Image 1 (tube, rainbow, N blue to C red):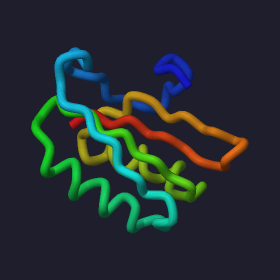
Image 2 (image 1 turned 90 degrees about the vertical axis):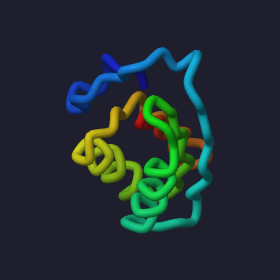
Image 3 (image 1 turned 120 degrees about the horizontal axis):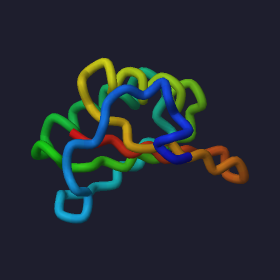
Length: 94
């Protein structure tokens, strides 16, 4: 899903992602709201401008986590659904 396909996301990336830190965090098997709690702790440990890619398999978390991240001031760069595996990837910039 591109940034143009998600008009409800208000925050905009502030850095060039080619030069910033990038991490993946597997939260498959972790239900909402704990997946956001764990993601938030990881984001707080990361430097400003870093990007966290989250793997989720909880549909509620995939819907709620991006909204929670934006409410906290993070930029949600993309949400990608993989229907064959019923999984999502969410990219968040601190």
